[in-house]
Length: 84
Image (tube, rainbow, N blue to C red; front, side, top):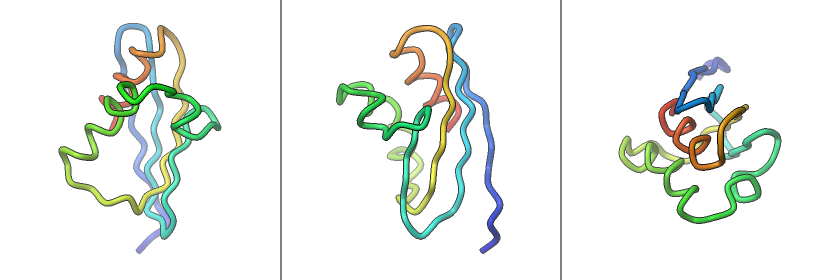
């Protein structure tokens, strides 16, 4: 497996999310250099973000780094979902 990554951009209202998905042995999910559970503190917001993974059936063997800016926390979660 190569060490390449996939980079996408997701937008919702004025929120913009830049997402990098890298194949990895150990899974990691960082949003603005914080763990996903620290950044999106409610389960509803985490469900919005993770819905793309559950629908696509991807395994958790990826390192995902996200830089998100603008708008409110809910729109940021939706921008991340659109990017994934």
